Image (cartoon, rainbow, N blue to C red):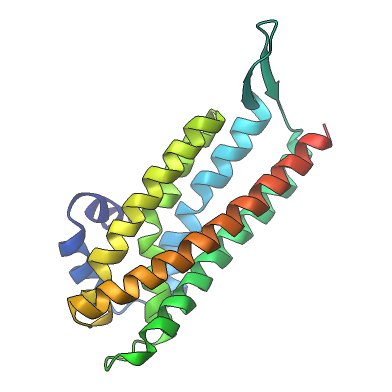
Length: 201
């Protein structure tokens, strides 16, 4: 698992070729990669919101405005957040499979879910900033993670799904557009959940 993470960050083209040749199953992907890395934003958010608290800036009188969530509420929200992340990977895999139906290679859903799971690696890693939950810092890390995931999408789709680079460019652009919508929905649900948690404090 760790070698794929490092490879995707340092030499993604070569790593995609290696991952593609492994013919990994979805259960193995989740067990060795997604379930582990998806814990990063969840655990970091739990620690950040309970020990540090969301930082919303400084009030007019110079007092730092922080809102902490009780551990009991945070555990419930963390479980829901974790489930949403796992579901988002599966949804994106199915979206990619649907987009790739038109091509001769006809990649199956399992292969596309595996691709989506590895593609999301930078997004998982960006969740570490939630240890110190500043709104602007979390947004910046999320944008950087999204941009690198988009790069992995464009670089990896042609070799992984065995389609031409031109076909990969079209499919990647469509997948990225849908992926951004899925991400926005996930972020909206996350904001609602954590906002609900702060209202219970």
